[in-house]
Image (tube, rainbow, N blue to C red; front, side, top):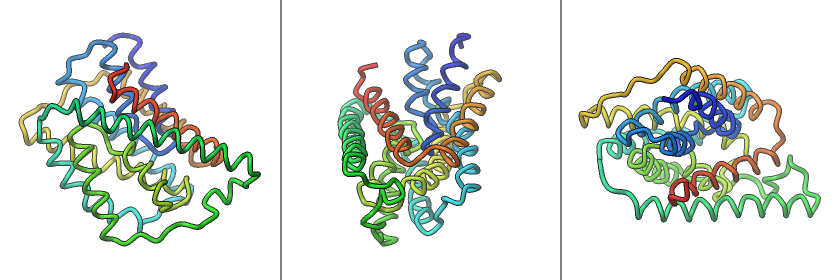
Length: 253
């Protein structure tokens, strides 16, 4: 690993953790650009996900944004599906291209909605002015299972899929969605790693500077997102994260 890698990993972790994500798509993009072997990239991204998602989970929980009733149906269904996806080794080029387009459209929609609220003078506290939409446990479980399978197949924690879905469904305010996304990513990353180990793919070694950079970036980013950043800023950061993930999945970088 080059000397540049810890610095970039730390910056990616900071940006992603500020919106409750852990950074797998960013880590994958960085490691691909730096020429790491494909068989190393996927499990390394998941291991870094575990570190950053653990920190983000604690921070958003401390801030009082976590909603267990929304989280558990998603998580219970997603974990076994993520393990199954992690054990499958399939070419995913076409799938990633489709998901990349969806994420890009989601990012554009988030920005448009934020700008519309700003122009209309809508207060950030009423960003969900219509109120959260009640979702059944069955619908949440179906959503969690589908995202878990996708996260296992692609080697990411699933946050880039979960965030736009929950925003589109008006499931909760932005900071509550971030607080749900972080532990969701943590569980799915662990399940994806377990699926890979079961399939006979060993965990690669990770240098201590990379681990430290991810932990530091995750701690700073999640502290900002949970306690300091306004909702509008979080929306723009979410859009940036989704756009970056889209560019990565579409193979532009």
